[in-house]
Image (cartoon, rainbow, N blue to C red):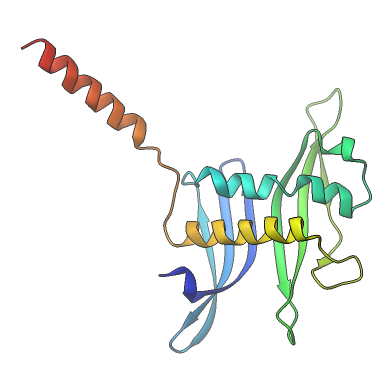
Length: 164
């Protein structure tokens, strides 16, 4: 599959090592909605793209910028205007409750790109980055966990050569 076949990202969720991405894929016979569930390591950029929405979560929900501390955006859901195709986003986050191990669940209002509140250029870029990283994950790009093994193999080879 190529990123061009993915028409819309509908949901990106990362929590406790589980990744869920729901998307629309263009096929010869039409468009399908598909779900990808994985526990494979994503590229660090995918997790970062989701987490970097936290300051916007607080801004758009009327929270103080001080509330960003301990706020983890773990899900973004997208809907698209039927006429214009313009996206809207709804985010979910968890925030640690001070002095406890408990997490508070928070949900943002639905933010339409061209709506009353509107998106800043920076927020629009963050959303596009998240959608692009989701496309890469769908197409098979993952975190490179095998690098540590290669380093160990190189070390073993160097040790084998030095004992000859």
